[in-house]
Image (spheres, rainbow, N blue to C red):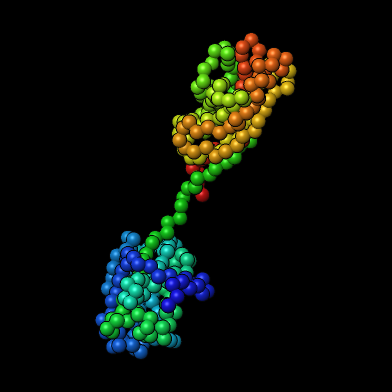
Length: 299
């Protein structure tokens, strides 16, 4: 027996879990074999509606199985019950269930009350004792019903280039007095999220700078946030700024930093002729060039 088969969009896969909506066991398959009348199960409730399973044995050499909605007249006119339907055949030999589905949503309404598979499984395979579907003249079938309710809203992620108020400047005095630890700027808001800059001035032979994602503005949709930024060390005597580009998905949690380990060497920084350290102060700048904003909107 193949564990998976696909034909005309229909998939057949073995699984261990029993069907969640209905199981029908026929103890006496040989009695109904070859007869034309269908077997209709008792009414059962699943997903807020009433149903029956309808079993046909021997339709053109196949087992046929259908799901029928009961009390279809209770469905408001013009509306439908959309179902993701799986039908099952028990395989006692393997203690598993052959699961049959075609992935299409079944639309039950007052005009179309039954959906299923005319060729659920061919009789030759079903009645082959080596396949293990029938044990001691007993076989079982099942159904699993999941109501598909189309979403009314969607999460829309929009990439915004050069958002409003996207430049933040951080002037740091008394640079020579700073210790071997991380220092952080004030938080600044761009898009849905607060951000801040951070660095350790004595982490090595170069000056690093990182952008950190912080909390969200009130009523924002908290999701991963795209942050693309031009990180600058300002030249205080010319326009020859040191600039590095950084971009990343920032997780929902705060204090996740991404940036560059070297925006300038400490030798160049302390070279007075370069113009980056003036009056024992440096100036960082963050230009947020692209961020994401997430909203819940109608479909």
